[in-house]
Image (cartoon, rainbow, N blue to C red; front, side, top):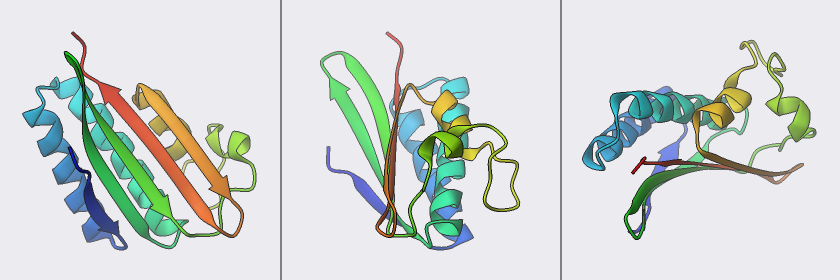
Length: 133
C-alpha cells in the first residue's frame, strides 16, 4: 500500500495525524490498547517534528507480510538534527520544556523503532506496530 503522506507544521496537523493513525489501526483490527500506544507514540513524535524539527511530514503505511499485519509511521524533518541520539533517547533529557519522555517513550510503545539524524540536515524516525496473531 502506498503511504499516506501528511504535513506536520501545526498543532492541527498533529491532531489530524492522530485521527488518521487511529482510523488506520481500527481498520486493521488492532486492539484498543495497541491503538492507544501507537496514537500516543505518533503524537509525541509528531510534536517533536513540529517543535524541534521546525516542521516536516509523516508517512502512514499499512504493512502486510503474509498473514502478518502492521502499521508503520515515519516522521521526517529537515531541522537541526540530534547531536547525541543516545542521550535524546534517555528519559528526562529534553532541549525544551517537556518532561523528556518523547523519544524514549515512543520507542517503548512501538514494536520496532529506528532513528537517523544528521546535524544540520534533519531527523527521520520510524516506528512499527505489528498485530499479534
